Structure formats: C-alpha cells, structure tokens
Image (tube, rainbow, N blue to C red; front, side, top):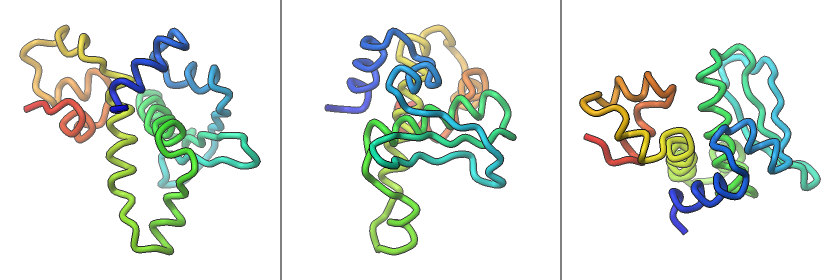
Length: 142
C-alpha cells in the first residue's frame, strides 16, 4: 500500500490529521525533552512505541518532527536507523525519505494544495510548517 493511502486510512480511522492526536490514539507515547541538535527520534521498548521530540524546537517544527517520527512508527516500526547507519552498509536514506513523505501527506493532503494556488513550494512549506524537501519528494511539485 502506498504511503498516501496508509496516511489517509489512519486519518479516517482516528478522525484526525494532527500527529500528536494520532500518536495518542495509537498508544504511542510522545516525550518532549532536551535533545541538543537532534530534532527527534522514534524507538520501541518492550512493545511500547515512543516518539521523542526536542522540546527546544519551535511549535511548527515539533509538529513536523512528530509527523516524521510517526511515519517511522507506522512504516518502519522495527527499524533501528541509528544502529543501521553506524554499524551496517544499509542506506537509511530511503527510510528517511519515506518518513518525510508520510509527514507531508499527513500535514498537507492534496486538497490543501488547492487552497494555495500560485504559491511556490517554498512559500507553501513555510505556510504549512513542512520541510520543503518533503513536499518536493512526496507531492512531485515543481
């Protein structure tokens, strides 16, 4: 199932597109904490899923980070990207692109694009609080 379909199915099931509400309804604990230069990360311990978010980020960045990490929880629940990056030759870039696409689909459904005709991708990204690269990659804008 493609990412857009998975996002839309989750949003219908739980009745929201807010990543924090989705995490709560999916029993994923969101922990805000000081993380230095790290925006956030996802992990699972004893079948409990966690999303860790840097509490020092601005609100819109926390929202995107939560959506991105929720993407990992849904699409790659068993992947340990820090381990893979540091200890194997496996490229985690595909996993990161997929999590970014999940976040873009969650925070910017296709119907929202119609509300901003004439906006550049950069302007749209700033308005919606989404990383520009995520919109480019996921929505095929240009």
